[in-house]
Length: 333
Image (tube, rainbow, N blue to C red; front, side):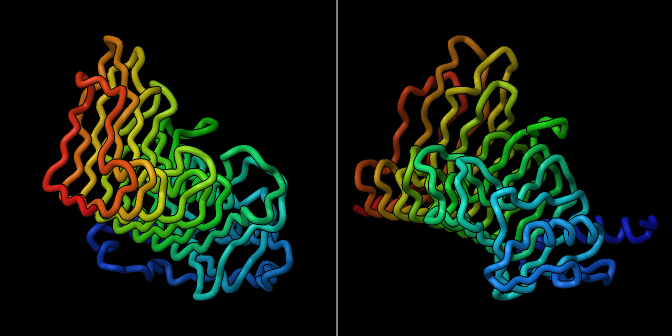
């Protein structure tokens, strides 16, 4: 790839966040566009297109790959590459074929950088999964990656989470960073609409997470590190809507304290929750036991409508930890 093309492509993906928020979705800096069918993708809603789609992804690095129709794939899923740009045309989607697995990622964004996904429609086909246990089937999994933009994704019927963000599972970056997700819609997932396990500079803008049920905690959003090496810094959740979940938004920090001092920064603004079964909002589970965990977790101007039990819950939470701040809440019983 020549230097000019690479520079143009990276510049397109890393445009200012304000431009993305204004709905700018046509990022074609190089002028190059390729179509999935050129690589043998049938997109007929029946054929297993995974191998052909993976070839299309691999061969279109630095260009915009357009997925043109309804694709069925097996549970091996698709790997994005650094500098991948994938656009789903109207009516295009990825849906898993019948499977028998507790663990899958329909789209993996692992150990890469500069990735753009436009309008991905992902269906985890939980009704076609013959296993009964587990909770690790993910729609879009982002791990050890940086500069990732996902515009208007839909992740439905996943065995686990719609979107999962974490540290590298291999030899990638220690944590995911600079991840922007605009207008995410998740419904019918068993565990979470979104899990943020580890990340820095993470934005979700105007997401809707609803109808999450099947295995605990069944939250619209769960911010829950797995250990002391995880990072929860500059997490911004702007105008989220949660409906019919066990928890609307759950921040659970039990595993974070350890030998490393940790600083947590989470800002939630304009949260609207409807009909949460356990709590619209919960910050819980932190026992520092003398270890240092500082920072802040704020929720401004939330509206919590008809919570079946509690609007806000904070249990087993050490007040020496990050400050919890809720301003201008509205509770509608």
